[in-house]
Image 1 (tube, rainbow, N blue to C red):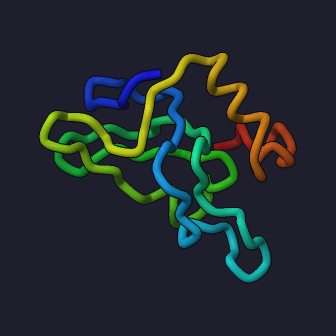
Image 2: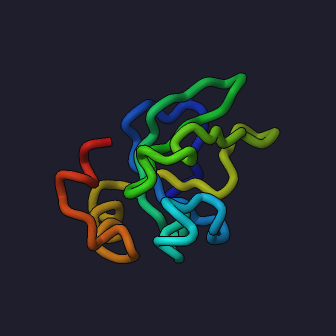
Amino acid sequence: MRPLTASDPVGTHVLYVGRADPTASVDVDRDAGRGLQENHPGTVTAVDEQHGVRIAFLGLEHEPMAERRFRADDTGVYPGLVAVGLDDWEAARSIGWWAGLCRDAREAG
């Protein structure tokens, strides 16, 4: 596990290690608690030094959250995001509210 940087390519597995963000929710009224959570797994879908990195977080791929861009700090690190290997990503994928999603929905991205 290491900080995500602009040199990491599209397809890199990540975990969100920032604080939970209830505003990044599937449907706040219907699905309370289904927002961006600590250790939420995702995959880098776009890297742009000027506009930031975009992440497809499991269960939030088709939500407005999918268009959010994370910007790098002055050192080139994306705060709140860490790059992880497949084993760590799979472990994170098996916990949290997103673990209850059917496998096809999680990988449809």
